[in-house]
Length: 149
Image (cartoon, rainbow, N blue to C red):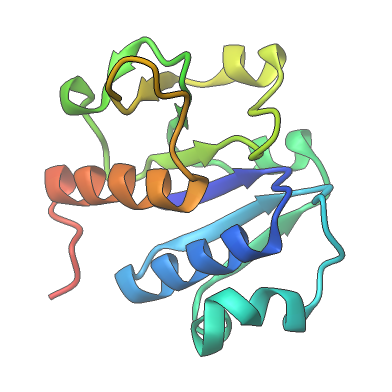
């Protein structure tokens, strides 16, 4: 299982997701371009020393990323048709998160094998991307027995 970030806008969120991946043993894919200058310093602020402990794969664009995906692409989206608590995850799923500002384009949305949403109370737009990644990854790891020993 992996987390993938589609053209992320904020280095702080990427660093937090690197920390999440490092702590739970899950690699992170970053689909470029990013909305920030890629630097160890920018990512280290929120990822602390965990950023160097996660397996990170950078992809120059969407097509380069798709060519490396061995399993399903599971998109987390406010437009997802399946509630998180009704989704069935697999060990080789890649949990795709859209950019903070614009999500993913329709063409990317349409290529997802499964589109999942985290239910929110009425009137709320969305969660922070790192929070959403943590919630979705927790459920996926629970279902697949992927929690660290």
